[in-house]
Image (cartoon, rainbow, N blue to C red; front, side, top):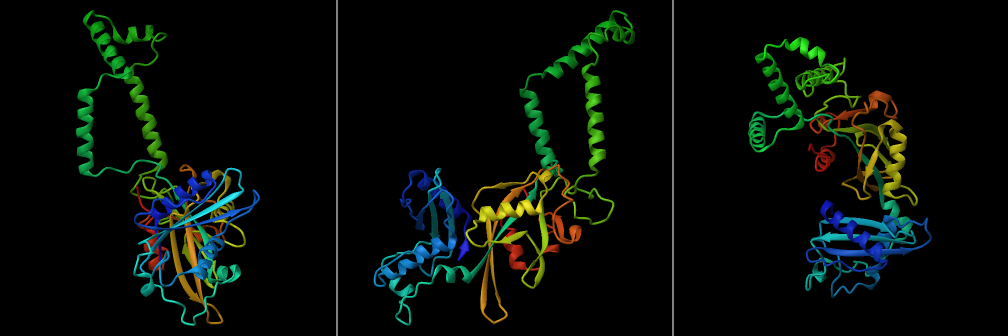
Length: 378
């Protein structure tokens, strides 16, 4: 089963609606199935993913294997949402699935009874160890300047500029420039010395419109000298240096780090394991505090993940262990240089990468393919 962003957005929206209403109501599910979990407690309690999963899975004890129920073997996409009431005493988890289950006449063939004939419901502890859950951050540094236009884009821009100019009125600056030209032309016609007159009128008009344009142009040239040749070379003295976010200023950059997960030391998006009663949001907030300094001004967007990656490995005793990684979006200040990320090994253990450069770091091709579904240039 794969994580579906559209279903996750729907589920999150419905979870927030149910938290507002403080009760469980199914949405109008025409082309997807839906499960809802609800928990009541004090303001500081949590409803974890394993708890919600156990609530739903325990319904197997009441299954009518000759009738129908929710998820079938054809269901291959899912999305989840979580919300709490304003008072914090009611928590709601909504799960949505596509294609939906519960088709009449199909449940018997696609969801058979247990071979042993005995229905087993795992405990919360057993369910939690089946998967190791990690929460990660997709830390983005937005583009600082606009990218260079292609020849076709330039032609379209020129056309639109010409059309806008034909339909527009003069701005205050353009009116001032026109008046300056007319005034100087009249002075020349009357035989006055323009320079002498300009000095005598300095108190009333310090700068003409043309003087202001020259000043603005000088500021622009100074700006480009400071940031370098955008899009052509990095602003760095070392060729290929990527341990700084002050490069590729016309592209969006993503932070990748080298972390040790188990015995493996590899590159990827920064992650942290979810343990105990922690939520994805609380874990990534802690991760951001550890990883990024205050001047980064990191902003985490939303509570629902934008993507998920899963894989399996063998433990030392030969058992199969599953890993799920859920990623949330985060943005840093685009003027922060990103050179003081708090990771082991310092500059050798992190990099600011464009989408095209991710393949230079990530060796797991399935992970790279998954990341490219939600890390895009825009």
